Image 1 (cartoon, rainbow, N blue to C red):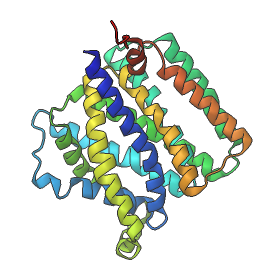
Image 2: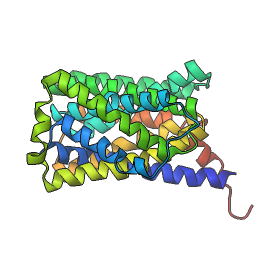
Image 3: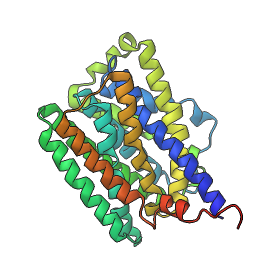
Length: 303
């Protein structure tokens, strides 16, 4: 029984490392495309052409599939892309978005009566202090706005996690592909409301090689592969066992942002991010979490 869970842990950890690197991939795409165009193309290629080959999950109503797609596309990833487009760095974006783990567990406690341990609360409290320090030491208004938008995106991710727990889709890949189809008209509507959709006419001109790589990576690797595995774990285990795995994302995000974009931080920001990461690991290494279970159940080879 424990071997299966350790395999799941390893796979989940690989996915979160990939997600951290994805923020640098997003940044690469945003250098040629704006946030609306990049997000729209991501979900367009996630849905098409696969909807013609993968059946819609019949066990989940169209309402929940559509709701997930709208929240996932606009409430989560358009907000993150827009925050980065306005100047929030990939490293900070990857860090702030992981507050979704806290929101997921708090909401799961409220809606599904899943228990929150004392160590969970301590970890959340330490990370919250670090977040407030990051906001305080961020002098650029664009960075502060980006942080606020990314916090809203974290709430959206938590809502998406709860939808998965409620609906329990059996065909997880089909759920991702078909929900992405509903993200496309939602993104088009938001684009038209905000600025008349003018940037959409610029897509053919701005679709460079790097932008294409960014779109395809986000569509097929990050969304279809990554979220299919993540959602399968989310529906199988309690939120407090799975959500902490996402807290590995900022480490990968910060490192890749440094390597590819030479992202640097002030001493105060660096200390603040360190406090957030300490809180994340206090939270993640709780004896009741997926990671804590893994380490606590390893047996010596001779037993």
